[in-house]
Length: 294
Image 1 (cartoon, rainbow, N blue to C red):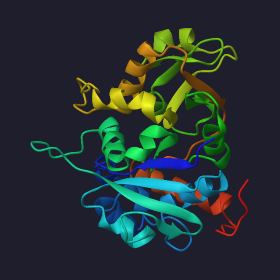
Image 2: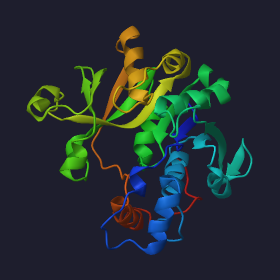
Image 3: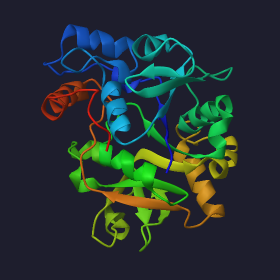
Image 4: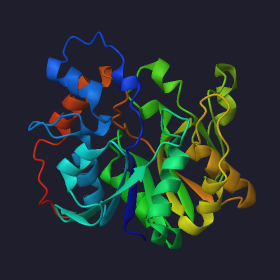
């Protein structure tokens, strides 16, 4: 069991900055979406962002140490969660910041594997322990975060039932499939699987499983694969699934797929803002940082 959670929030949020025809968006929401990190767009009843609710769920799941990976222009995160670089006290959890610097010659961050690598280089103690990694723009449940924290497998990911995700079909079709063996061990992650091939990827329960980038890692095991992560030929980024799959080649059966069947609110584009706001209103009516941890 571990107590550290790394949240990746250093991306460029380029899809969020595209125009939207959503009529329910306020001008303030559009303005924030154009300039803020997705994780900091005001959504809650008091204008607090989705990251508040992710941190809240992490606290309830038992995490004590949170590392938020931000860009070198991410000063607004410190206005929300603490001005120190390390060990900010925030509602009973400790928040530290890592910076994902953009390499010379690039205008955008170098991907999720690069983000995690830079965080680990800035906090090398994490390489001697296990930790959880997740996105900042997905609201993972308390239960999912707790399962990753408590799991005894060296590495794990939440493998979500694709049919339980309440997204438009065209959005779901973009999610990579997690191929599991009979013991729920990860075999492969398949990007953009052909529709005609979907049946071969169903698990023993007949479910198609997808990854929403919620992982547990053995720090010492993963680090060399982050260090040597190849650049994705299409997206020109170093992506965490690439490092994970290269590790899997050398350490077969080292990554457990934990089956889950629930929706994961996602904040990718402006059209998602209204839906996530409604979800927060319905699910967090009695939001309080004083809630006891599980």
